[in-house]
Image (cartoon, rainbow, N blue to C red; front, side):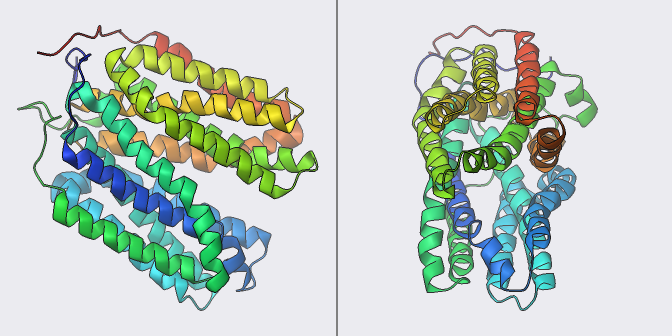
Length: 398
C-alpha cells in the first residue's frame, strides 16, 4: 500500500522543534488575517465599493488560492518547500503593505489577488514541510500543534484589528505586513532545510494517479471538502443570518464564534493525541460523526443558547478533523510533498468557494434546514467513507 504508515505509538515522544516553529508562523499568519478581514469591507467602501463589489473582493482571495494550488506541489519539489513557504509569506506581506496604500478599488483587487497567491504558497508548503518533519506516529499531534497556532491567531486577530482600525483603516494592513515579515525571518532563521524524519527513506514523490487510487487519500480529501463547505458556507455565511433573523445584534455572532473557537482550541491537542494513539480510522469516524450530528441538530434549533452549544459540539468534532485528515495524507504521501498536499488543500478551498454560494441558494429556494442538511450530508458521506478505512492498532514504541 502506498505510503503505508507504521503502527501508531502509544508512548509520548517529543515533537521536533520545527513543528512548533511552523505553528508560530501559522499563528502570525492567522493573527494578521484576523486583523484585516473585519476591516476589509469598510476599507473597500471608502473607494466607493458597494455590497456586490465588496463580496467580489472578499471571494477573490479564495478564488486565487484555488487557482494557484495546482502549481504549489511542483514548485515545492523544484525549489524546496522552505523557499516556497518564505516566498508565500513575503508575497502576502507585499500584498498587505500595498493594500494599505491602495488608491482605487481596482488596485485593491490586484493586491488582494497577490495575497491569495501568497497565502496558498505558504499554506501548502507549510503543511508539506510539517508532514515531512513529523514522524509517522506523531503526525496527529504535529497537525494539532500546527492548527493550534492558526486557531489562537484567528481568535485574537479580529479584536486587535478593530482597535488598530481606530487609529487608521490602513493600520491593520501595515501590522499584518510586519507580522508576515517577522514570520518569514523566523522561518529562515530557525526552520532547518532537509529535516525529513517523517519521510520514508528511498521513497519517491507519489504521483496523483496513485494517490487517487488510495482510499485513505480520498477519505481525507472528502473530509477536507466537507470541512470547507461547513466552515465557510454554513458557519460563516449562514449562521450569522440566522442569528440576526432572531433579532440579535451582529455582536452576538462574534461571541458565538469566539466561544466555539475557544472550545476547539482547548480540544485540539487532545484530539491530536487521539489520532496518534487510537488511530486514524477511529479519529476520522468520531470527528465526522460528531460534526454531522451537530450540524444536523442546528437545522432544528430556535434559540441562541442552543446554537452556541451545538457550535461547541461541532468544534469538538472539528478538532479531530483538523488533525486526522492531515495525518492520513502524511501516511499516504510517506512524508513526501508533490501534488498530494496541494490537491488536499484544494479540496478545502473548493468547499470554501462553492459552499457559501450553494448554501445561500439552497436556503433561499428550499429553506434554511435544507441548507444545514447539505453540510450534514457531506459529513455523513465522509463518516461512511471513514468507516471503510483499515484500523491500525496502537503499540508502544521502544
